[in-house]
Image 1 (tube, rainbow, N blue to C red):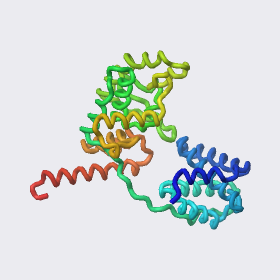
Image 2 (tube, rainbow, N blue to C red):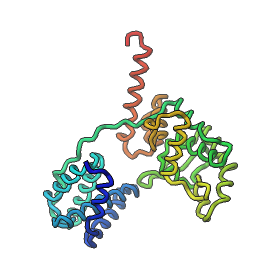
Image 3 (cartoon, rainbow, N blue to C red):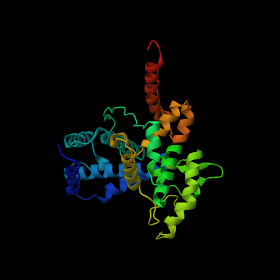
Length: 320
C-alpha cells in the first residue's frame, strides 16, 4: 500500500492549479466562512481537498472542477481508496464536495449536484483517551517549577486541565484573556466563538506564579513587541506553537511514567470532560465549558462515564 510520502510525491507531480479552479474554490470558501463561520483549519483543509481534486481532474483530462460529473468524482474516490487514504480523510472530502457543489447550484453555476449520491464511509465511534485522575496529577507535577520554562509549563498544563481547552486555544491565548481577580478566562474557540470558563483555585495559583515570576524572564528575551500580547511565551519571547506544546506534553508524560499511547494532543481536555462527568457534572454545562456548538458532540463523553459506572457497579454491588 502506498505510504503518505508516496501520496505527497504523487500530488507534487500533478499540474499547477488553473486560475478558474482557484477562483471557484476561493469564492466557495469565502461564502462558507460568511455562512457558517468555520474555523481556519477547516477552511484550509477544504481548500487543500478541492485543489487536489481540481488538479487531478485536469491531469486525467476530465471536466474541470465546476463541470465535473458523478463518474469523475467516483473515479477520484476510487483512486484515493487504492492509494490508502484514511476513511476520516475521505469523509471530510465528501463533506467538502457536498458543500461545494450545493453552493455551485445555489449560485447558478450548475444545474445538478454530482456529489448527491456519494455517501460518506462508516466511521468507527472513537472514544477520547482520558487519563485517570492520578495520572493527571502526576503529569501536572512533572515540570520543574524552579525554572521559568518549567513554571510556564506547569501553568499551561494546569490551565488546560482546569478549563478543558483545546491546544490551539491554549497557545493562542492573549494575556488580556485571563482575569485573575474574577477567576475567569475568555476563550476564542472554533468558529470564532467566545466562551467564559472558570479557572479554579489551582490553575489560578499557578497562573499568578507564572505571571509574576516566569513571564517577565521570558519577556526579557522577546525579539518583537508583538510577543507582549501572548500569555504563554517561548524563551525567545515568541508564542508557543501547537507542535511545540505537544512535544512538551509527551516529554512530561514520559517523566510521569504515563504510557505514550495513553496521551493525545487533547488528552487533558478529554480528561477534564470525563472527570467532570464522573463527579456528576451536567451535560449541558459541560457543553458550554467545552465550547461545543452541538450537544451531540459532548455526548460521546457519556459513553466513557457509563463505562466507569459499569465498572463501579461490578466492583461494589453484592449481586453484580
